[in-house]
Length: 327
Image (tube, rainbow, N blue to C red):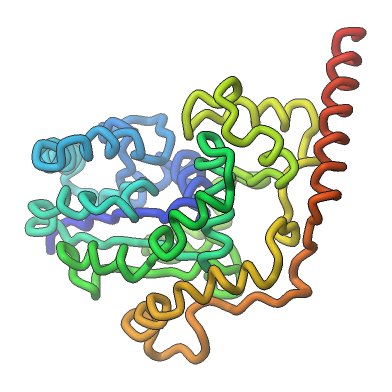
């Protein structure tokens, strides 16, 4: 049987950073189990970041040329470790990119290719995507939502695009909800698909929240500020917030700056697409694809509370800066 090529394509904001941290921490242990995780340049190395986002970003600039470069890189890894059972790649920028599947058109003919994708209820997915990337370059949340709703997080469209290259039976879809994940968390769930003998308890596990979201007050305060963010990937400001205030302004799952009715409206926009995913990937599971939200699950943040939290943060920053200067 041909060697496995396992491709974790995200999606973004579905625990990808935690999975990648896990891969980085256990690189050598996984290699001993026959699973090779290359570095970001798709070379075999002892120290890796656990993801291949930037490598694929380069490949996707010219998909035709990128396909050849990816094939050459995978073949080089295979040649370096011919007895390994699998090569594992992880890049959350692959899930939604329409050109991404074409990079694997030649590889699927020679490798037993499996694609893993985690999907999330769209209201949470959109809110997380806004905070992580789009708030850094846009100042109008609702204008952005209107421009992306129905398209961003359209799992049916993403999956059908990948099905043009990867047979449906080789695409593993996992619902990013604690109650639906193996072991109740994404790392245990991802580990369960690796088919290795070493128990999870014997592997290193990331501590704390990897790539957290921040409170709406902080995001709203700095949204679209070109003096703070160089681009959508610039996290220096948020690293500063954590350094100065710890986890005080890390967003909890209960915090919500949109109303329950607005949340339901976003979800309803995806009803047809989600039903298709349910019927084609989860035909034997009762109920809806995603657990429906309950109003009691959220603490709505009013505009007045949002302004109060902003002021609290700014005063805290001034005081923390003063204390550091004095000390």
